[in-house]
Length: 166
Picture 1 (cartoon, one colour):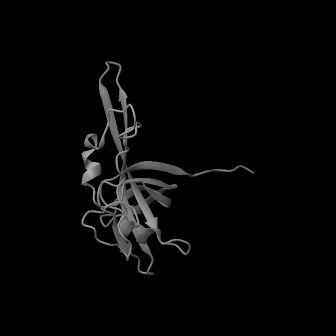
Picture 2: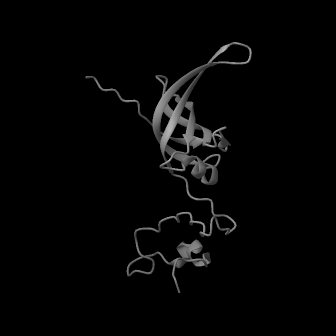
Picture 3: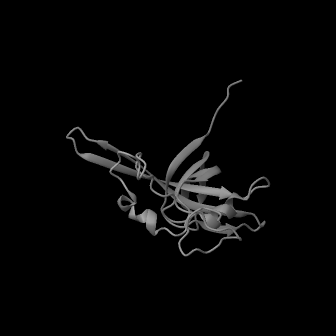
């Protein structure tokens, strides 16, 4: 018995906000376009870039509400990891022409972008996650023999909102 595998893994950026709709049966589906790019140098030494666009489809299922998650938290420009299978469809349009579509049926999705937290609003009762801060230099500020001080990191003094519970 032979086996087969249909698995797609992509990391890319959303070209626009996802479109979410409900089927006549009440199931929810989200669709979005994901851009992946590759760069290389030509034989002449010129930098080349090519962007591929992938149509992704995310369904709610009995085990996950992934389309609802996409609707709430995924926005244009976000970086995503998606995993799923490739599907080819064909249909007749209203003019009788045969149309073809290639889609990624998403089974797993990981949001790689920093959460949007501007404005300090809450989402579903949760405080927005903070964007990661730039890591300080390896040398400790104020350490013996170090030329660095807090003046070298003015944003550290300006940030009044720290993660300390007291």
